Structure formats: structure tokens, C-alpha cells
Length: 369
Picture (cartoon, helix red, strand yellow):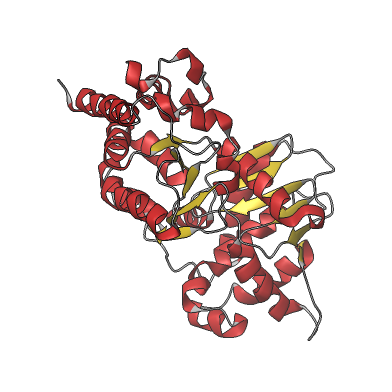
């Protein structure tokens, strides 16, 4: 029996053991769910009926960019998936599902077979069914969370969520997603402008030729968004609310003027001021912490490119903490895979990322396999 077959068998055995332990009586609280937002920089846990959350920092993108492969994701993931529910005091009887986002999509591209084996091992060791989520589904989760948290304060047609590995422009009916997160966009600039894969790299100073090439890169990659002409945007992620907005405000806004939006002309003015500077001077001019300053200029270029997609050439900015947990908790199809996870992994191996959208009801439950 091969390694993957043994791991799939472990999934079936684990599910059957839980079923038998219940002695025919389902003791799981009705409607309870545990969700893990497994992003490029960490894992966040949440649960239905609980306001508590728990988070573990874990740079999954760095692991994959270093060439270590999907198997290297297993130990820190298993540790977090086991410990975070205990820290937040979630009910251990609730079904637990993880959403694997940008880093896990990259792992699928790099080594699909290795990732399937890794996911089977993670499930066998933690009981969590980790699903590799398409970018458009992640975008829908972002819009769901924004509507929940902002309510009437959300006045735009779409939200912009800049993660570590991916960028989502998400609306109620249409979403656009690309691997243009804070780290992946910065890395692309490092490769194209500085001929290095080191992240972060020294992008500044930038001359006009560099700026032209950078703007062309972002323009080409967002050209396929196909957003309606009337699209308006609210940026909901910290690279914008905690990085770009305060920097632009400090560089371009009159003293004391409150700002909750970013205009295209102001972004261009800020870029013009910072382009000739090195990292130390950028940090001093903007007041950014060293950890933020390393990515600030590439963030400015990315946000500048995004304002070109908005009908009013402006991005609203929301001050709130978002995650994919609320959207995942509300995703009935995702939780339908919890008891049919061996079948999901088989489909992932056969059809790739589209496996999540297939019908779980067509699969026998794990304990019956």
C-alpha cells in the first residue's frame, strides 16, 4: 500500500472511530463549526457562537519559496490546528474545516501529489479537513466579512483585500483575484526590476524607467479584471489601512485633515516623493516602522494601479480586522466535505482546485468507504 493510500485509510479509520465512539448517538452540538483561515502569513481560528479567535504566525509562502515543498507545511500546520481551538476554548466535538488560500494554491501548483499527501497527513493528525480554496471563493469570503463588519459603512460596489500572497477584488456578484498580494507583488518587482528572488529586496531608489516598468506590470495583471465601469472600491486590509493610508496622509494631506480615502493624484504625489529615497529615508519621511517600510513603496505602486480600476479614481479605506473565518463558517458546501474528506482528496488529485466545487453528496461518507 502506497503512502497516500495509507493516509486515506487513516482518514476513513479516524472517521469510523469517532462514529463508533458515539455509540450510535450524535453528541455534536447542533450547528456548531470550527474554521481555520490558513493564509500566507498565519493561521486564524474561529467558531460559530464564539467571539473568541486565536492565531498562529506562520510564513507559509517563505517555506514554499525556499523550495521546501508541501511536506514542510505539515508540522507547523498540525501544531496550530491542534492547539488553537484549545486556546480559544472551542468545543472539540464541532466539525473543523480549514480554508487553504494563496500559499496552499501555490503548493498545489508546485507539487499536487505532494500536497494531497500532506493534506491527508494533516487530517490524520489533527482531524481538520483542509480544503484548497480557489481565489474567487476567497474573494467572496472577503466581501461577506466586509458586509458583516462594516454594514452600512460599506458604500462601494467591491472590496479590495490585499493578502500576503493574493489580491481579491470582491463584489456581491462578481469577484476578481490574482497572485498579487503584498509579498507576491513585492517579489515580482524584485525579480523583474532587481533580478533577485530575495524578499524583501531593495527596490528604492527607483528612477522613471523603473516606475514605468512597475506600472506596466500591474496594468497587465489587472487588465483582465473585467469590472463594470461603475465599480467603486473599499480597501479592507492592513497594508492599506495601516501602511499606505497613513504614509500618503503624512506626505500629501494638510496638517490635521482627517482622511479615510486614497485618491489617485495623491498616491502619485507620494510615489514621486519616495521614489528617489532609500529605505531608511522612506521610513523617516513616512514614520513607518522598519517592518512596514520594507514593503511600503511596492504597496504604494500596487494601490496606485488599483485606483485606475475605480470609476472615481479613489479607494475608500476601512479600519477593521478581517479574516476568511466568517465566510468559511457560512459555507455549507465546505462543511459537507468534512465527512467525505477522503473523496475530496481523491478529486483534488484528479481535478485540481476545482474539487471544492464538485458535489460532496456524490461521495459516500468516510466511515462507509
